[in-house]
Image (cartoon, rainbow, N blue to C red; front, side, top):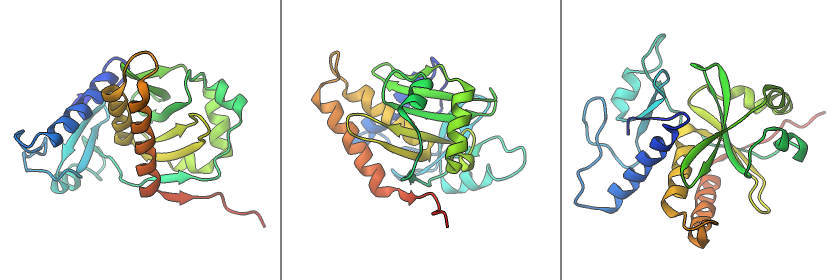
Length: 219
């Protein structure tokens, strides 16, 4: 799954997830293997990130431990923690100031570019939205959980579609799983009923697997 993702290559990252989905549905396809040592992988396996090339690689547990966690390591291990931010603070005006054209987006800090990227899924893949730094810093100041977000490998995932208002800190690969789902199921101009059912299923699954993070109560 070693596809770069940033701007135009963002679409390739989503495509790699689509290829994974297709392989899982076809029993005659060869099993997925670690991209570092070629060991056969379980469907739920580790992912590594090359921060310089912005590439995600599938990895076995051994390689994930071997190539990560050391100063100057070539790869970053994508964490598995999923946190639903129950008391996330953001006003409608602050959301509008982020200049995201739809109510579904994710945000991550890219250390190579030394900036926060705002991305939203579309039928063509993940698309970058302009992000004003002042607006982002204001939201971070209101939500201390964002200060714990690991650069490059974790993201704030926002779902404000319809009556929903959900905020998660997730591994970056979860964001591209969502992008892949949308690309796979989108039909016509509005997406069709199937894609919205799949998006709902994605967030139902995410909610079930996430731990809840609440703001500490003031004395």
